[in-house]
Image (cartoon, rainbow, N blue to C red; front, side):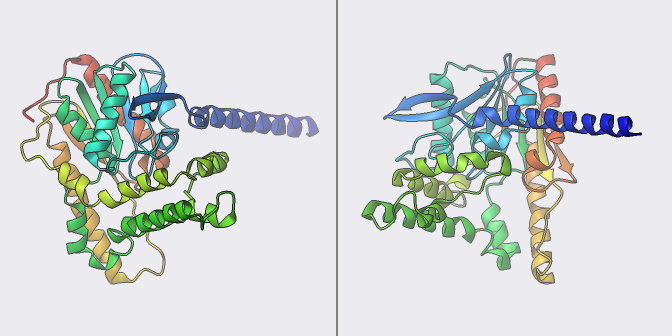
Length: 348
């Protein structure tokens, strides 16, 4: 009996060690800068590329995110083809930018990064949330290079107006939230500039804090050192300012068509509510998400081979809650591209 217990305990320890090693392998590419690509004017964009092959899968994070949000997905995709994720300006290990951080300028940065890194198409664009604006603008501009697309719970161009109309009581946590956070970062940058906020203090840590998954807690101190640059905080604030204004407007294109490009749009099926949320507010937000899902269906309709899929057990960060659904969607699009590798774009 004792030997059986010891064998079982040994198996559990070995399994835990394997899981720990696998976790370390997943997070390792994001703990240090990988390829700091110069894109002009003294700026660098951090590019994390894994694997080999074609097409190249390009991962774009949503608002406030960078390459590390893909840690559960990118390494798996790299077993099948080259997979590249990037850090937008002022986030992760990318330098600050004096340009407005709207969808147009972020798309310009992505284009410049891929060009400078000598990474050519075809591309499979994978984008989350507001990163969808970058993915679709990139596809607009390079229809002969983009062979497929996967969008994860994407933002839609009229999202802010829809929320304001359908769920006005959620404004403080919805449309107004990014503006409040942008003001906080702008205030932190101003205090750094005038010397009333000092790095390496508790006040500074609280001012520039960015939430990270437990797997990346070791990045906190390094990011804090980078965020001691006021220009970096202002770059982050600019993205927040533009997410409900310039970026959605820039993504509007009534003539957009992706022809018969393979395309999957994943819609989150879970929208957790605080237990004390009033029933009328809950109802408003439910309605908002129903309309948002209709917008996802409209994205899928941009291609004759586009489809929308509901990921029932996942909330907004589908790549965390159900990475297998994301991997399955990417695999489906990869398979379709390889059966018919030449992109078939429509009128843009």
